[in-house]
Image (tube, rainbow, N blue to C red):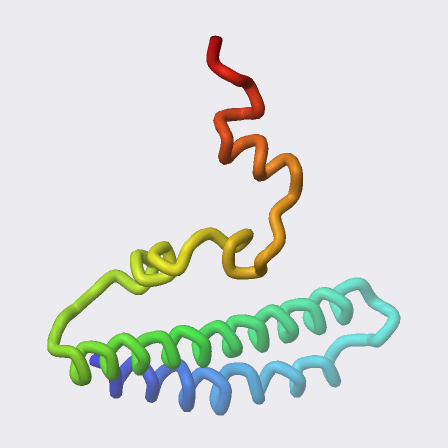
Length: 108
């Protein structure tokens, strides 16, 4: 399945879909609103292609982790073990400290 997904999204999609789209720009006047829409849609297809590459990298990473360790773990749970982003960065704002301390209210 990973081979098919990669072939369709990393080879077929950019070669046969995205590369053909700019040819349609020559059919439309540069002054029309349709031209801007086509350029926008081509940009969105390129963003989608970047997402396909990102997701494929995640799939490969998950597969590598499974092969290396023999266990399937939730990648999100692994990042939660590291701590919150405030702890990772090393700086917390006064507001997040107050929330962490129960909203800044002291019990009576």
